[in-house]
Image (cartoon, rainbow, N blue to C red):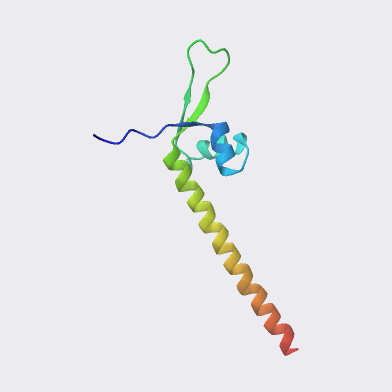
Length: 89
C-alpha cells in the first residue's frame, strides 16, 4: 500500500515548528521558499488561509540550520584569527 500524502499545515502550525511568526511564514510562501496554497474552508467566515506542504518546511529548516552553522563557523574562524593577532602584539 502506498504511503499517505503528507498532512498539510496551516501557517500558524508552521510558525510554531519554525519558531517564527505566521507573517514570516506567509512571506516565505510568497517568495517561494515554502510551498503553499490558499484554502477557504466551506462554511467558515472570513478569508482563506495558507496551507503549507510539510516537506517544504523541512527543507527550509535544513537550509536555515545550514546557514546558521556556516555563520557560526565563520564567526569562530574570525574570532580565532583576532585572538591570534592579539597574542602576537
